[in-house]
Amino acid sequence: MRKISRAALLCVAAAVSLTACSAGAGKSDQSGTAAAPGKDDKFSLTVWSNFSGREQDVVTKALENFKKKYPNAEIKHEGSQDDDKITAGIRSGNPPDVALSFTTDNIGQFCSSGSFQDLKPYIDRDKVDLGQIPDAVRSYTEYKGNRCAMPVLSDVYGLYYNKDILAAAGITAPPKTTAELLDFAKRTTKKAADGSIEVAGFIPSSTFYENRPQMWAPVFGAKWQTADGKSSVSSPEWQEMLKFQKDLIDFYGYDNLERFRSGLGQEYSADNAFHQQKVAMMVDGEFRTAFLKDQAPTVKYGTAPFPTSKPDLYGTGFTTGTIVGVPKGAKNTGAAWELVKFLSFDTDTIVQLANGLKNIPHTKAALADPKLEVDENFKTFIDMAGNGKLQGNPVTPIGDAHIKAVGDFIATYQSGKVSDLAAGLKDVDKQIDDQIAKSGK
Image (cartoon, rainbow, N blue to C red; front, side, top):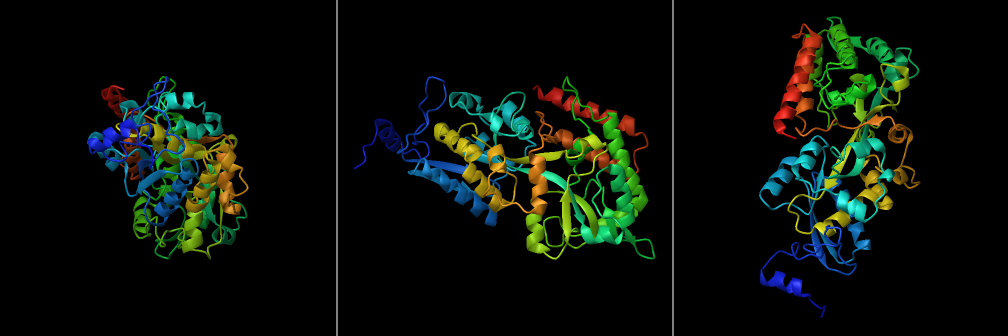
């Protein structure tokens, strides 16, 4: 029989769960970090994520790769666990050992509150080279130097365009500037005799699919904060961005565009407007290539970086991704960190996940790995991921409240209810600054 340690006997006597009895649960090394399990130790880890269905199966299979290093590890992967459930688990004292979050919106809250444990001591102890991760990805997985999370794949956003619709309008290449986007959108729009829209060249409405402010800001060079941490959404770049959107909305007519938009299919369905060739161009992430292959294989389309307000900005865009951390109160911190590190840096596993989920690898080695499945349209996003121009989510201690404040204002402005754009945006700046001040962080 395998020799049972005194610590394990105490766990059994106390009727504590297998996870709590895992190696590394209560042992610390000289750095103050929980010790890693031994290669032959038997232990259990519970992993929560928001994946479901086929995607959950892909992630579960990838998690099994961890057993190459720890053959006696048992990993329980529970899907459909969003940030609210993760937070509730932490507050109740019953968190998972490892948590994956779909959004980076809450990274500021996770790090500043201690909900996700600080990983820097483990990174320093194990001499982890964070330089393997592109700068933009590194930026959205930490807050003010507190690295409480690591990346697990990325999303990169660019332009999708219908080749047939553009060709019918005499356009042979996708737009590179926002001026071209405005022109091409008008030229590819089709209206019925009564003026109603049949095909929209491009829909700039803030409530349409991926048209969130963080997607748009990089291509206009718009920054969320000043150097001293104050909100800067009233800057000239933000005003230029909103005026561009309003000009195109006015071309359609707000009410006319809203009638058309309300009749379009849901974003993540086969009735997606781009799938149905109801829009000529749109902003979306690399994952759309998989949806198009599955749900609209006959649509002839191309991808490109999103058009920018200035030529030197071309190639920039928004990036975000899934993040992984060790929640406060996790019972097996040492082994949990080993799994986090594995998911973050094991190239074969990263490529396996990228091919299975059709997301972008988050390390330089995986981006260049020959086993990565890359076609012409997916290559656009791979190239953008490595060009050094991408920007991540704005990180604050108030979660996504600042993004919501800007989004709410944009919707109001686009509807024509705001007469003074500059003054309205200054009010949003104050609202965001006040919320951050009240957070005390």
